[in-house]
Structure formats: C-alpha cells, structure tokens
Image (cartoon, rainbow over all chains, first blue to last red):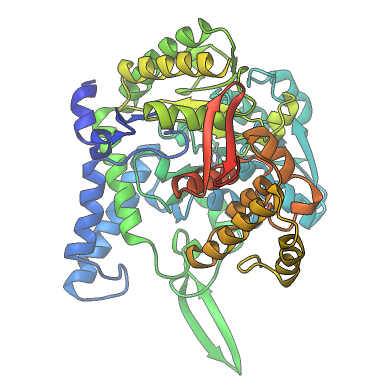
Length: 412
Length: 116
Ligand SMILES: Cc1ncc(COP(=O)(O)O)c(C=O)c1O
C-alpha cells in the first residue's frame, strides 16, 4: 500500500497547524475526505442536482442512476445479499434507533447489551425496553475491552429477543467475537444488531458471512460525507419491521376511500426512507466505498495494525502513561485509549498537542460513560484516544510520541 | 437567558461601585464580556465558562469542570459531564481573546482577560 500516494488524495493533510504539518489522529471520530469523494458530490451538485426516483427529466434520470449505483456500492462493500437491504440513514445512531424502535419483539422478552457500547448502541435499546416493559441485561466487558464468551452463553437465554453489541469498540478498539455471539444468539432465537460504526471503516466486513441480522454504519468514519449512515437488515426482517418515519416516498399509493386516507407502503428500502433523501451524501458514500475497495480493506487493516503495534510499543515506553484496552492487535482496531498522569484531565492533552504540535486527537469519555465508570474514571477526567487510518504514517506516530514527551515534561 | 446583564447584576455593580475592589474590577470586566456576548452570540457552554472564571483568579481545566457540576450552574452548564463540548467552548473563548490559558504543572490554567 503506497501511503505517500494515498496522502496526496487528502488535501487537508497539506495544512500547517500552529507551525506544524497536520498530524491527524482522530479518524475514529471523523475520517478525512479524499478528493474522489469530494469530486463525486461536487459533480452531483454541479451537473445533475435533481430529485432521484421522481423526476422524469434527464437530470432526474442521472440523479436516480447515481443514487441507486451508490446503494449497490455500499451493498457490495459489506456484501449484502441484495442492495435493497441497505437503508440510507443520517448516521449510525439513526440506524440503531431505527432497529430499536421498529423491530418486532415478543412481550416480556429480554434485550442484551454491554457496558462497552457507545451511547448510541445502548440508549435506543434501554429506551425500547422501557417503552415496552421488556427486560434488559447488561454484559460487563473485561477491563481490557474483551469479553468472556461464557458470559454471553449464560446471559443469552431462550427468552432473549435482541442483542445490541459493538463490533469494534471506539474506546478500547477491541473487536467482539461476533461470529460466536451470533451463533449463541441464533441458537436461542435472538436477533443480533451489530454496531459497525468503527468496524466497517477499518476491516473487511461481510454481513452474510457473520450472519448478523442488522448492522449500523457511519459513513463519515469511512472517508465519506457527514450526515450519512447505513442500516443493513436482512430483507425478511426489514419487511416485518414497523415504519420509523412515514410520508412522501414511502408509499406506492395513498387512497381516499369512504372519507379515510389509506396508505399502501412500499417495500424496503423505500419504506424506511421518508422524504427527500441526501442524494449528494449517498453518492459520496458510494464513492467512499469505491475508494476504500480500490485500496483494499485487507491492506488497510494490515497497514493500521503495523502503525498500531508501533504506537503501542512507543506508548508503553513512556512513564506516566496508562494504556486502556487489549494490546492483542489481532483483535483490535487502529486506536489506542490512554491517560497521562501529569495532567488533571484528558482535555489538556488534546489541547496541548493541538496548540503546540498540530496533532489532533480526541479527549473525553467518547460517548461511552458506562465503560469509564466501570474503570473508575470520571467522564470529566476522561481518556485520550489516538486513532489511525489509511493515510497515517510512521512519522505521524513519531510526532505524537514526541509531543507526549514534551507534554509530560511541561506538566510535571 | 444570559444575553444581557440582569437588573440584579447591574444593581450589585452599582452598590459595589462605591467601594472599588478587585472583585468589582473583575465583575466589571465580566459584565463587559456579557455585553460583548450579546453581539457575538456565545454558546451556553461559553457563558458558563465565563461565569465560573469570574469567581477565581485562575483555574485548572479540572477545576472548571468540577465547578460546572455545582448546582448554581446547572441552568447553563448542561453539557459538561464529559467536558468535551465545554472545554471546546473555553478554547474558542481563548482564541477570541476573552480568556487566556497557560500550560504548566497539572495542565492548563485559565484566566479571564483582565484578571490577575
Ligand atoms: C462505536 C460507535 N457506535 C456508534 C457511533 C455513532 O455514530 P454516528 O455518529 O454515525 O451516529 C459511534 C460514533 O463515534 C461509534 O464510535
């Protein structure tokens, strides 16, 4: 993989921040955007900024073609059985909410989730359980972000109807044993919602091979535009789900019969895509999927693992730094959460590295307060997270470590 | 709504005007910031940072976050549990020149501009 060549695709990497070349280590929050994605969206706005699927004219036809091609590209990216199993949403959070609020679950059944979930992977299910008086049981991740598979075997019982589990944690980076979890769940009649917001951008994802029932994807973390997400669902399940939003574009017909308005809804995906869609965003998402696939998800995974090993090794050599999450890079996405003991909050690390070294990384509790509480870390103290992606190189990691050295010295 | 100094705040200031003190000078600068804020439309988090810093000569980031959790700031500091958005607002204030920050032992210390 030619990283120097790839870096040319990301114009922002040419920026100088506070006198230093930009070092971007916050891709787990938001990835940078390549020219190819920007160009695809720009082309839509400049050449055929029309309604897809409704307008008969030439521009409408071009928009319809590009919009449906984008769905196919995303479907291909995660290997769905058919493109119609991919629903466009605003973000992974909306995808998770859509399932939590609309999937049919038996009365009195149980939902299972974990302490490692992003709030977007836990709260929609907590609220669903509250709404319908369902049981909810929480599996505690180990401190290093891994799970004891025996916990899953004992908590998922035949009364369990749904599991929401983060495939790759945005704090510890740990990859959950999804195949095993799905097998246990299906064996007991439960559905699995996989939160792939962090997994899909960094690893090859094959939803059919994993046999997950639903998957939530965040396009802005995979080189695509903001405000776009994807919900994958098995077609049979999508068909049986209640609508999330209704209105224009969700219906084949709305009849007026005997003084009543009678809707006739379309099948998925339209059933879940009410109102005018984010066409430019979807087209950008398709371009992002194409871009990542042209480089190869296996190559990206391998490149990140190399950088991750180097980063972990360098961080371990620093006094005053505590690392969170497993250091087994084979079950870890390209990110490291850590704490520096010479400052009182993680925000000071992020502020200092940006101000003094042009290094961007994340601080806080990363929308995973339960895990921070489990670890005895108040969310306001927080942890730092450095995350790598296909455009990062060894120099970025070296600059980061040098910045940390200086920070520790200045704050001791 | 904190867009304008309240009548109570202005009255307090009038009382204190007869006995100028360090806290009076600080409060004056705080009120002038609040006036400025009506023009620039500061976020609630930013307003909260200013309110907290008004009470002290300088504070560590962790001390500001701790203060923000106290009941008297609940109306303004709704977003400070994780601190991300809150400290981002403080950094914006520093970039606008309304407050300053300096890195040293323990991390950043924040001051109101005009405070010693
Ligand atoms: C693991 C995980 N799940 C869900 C989300 C929410 O994604 P989105 O911002 O696309 O709603 C995030 C975002 O950081 C995440 O890291």
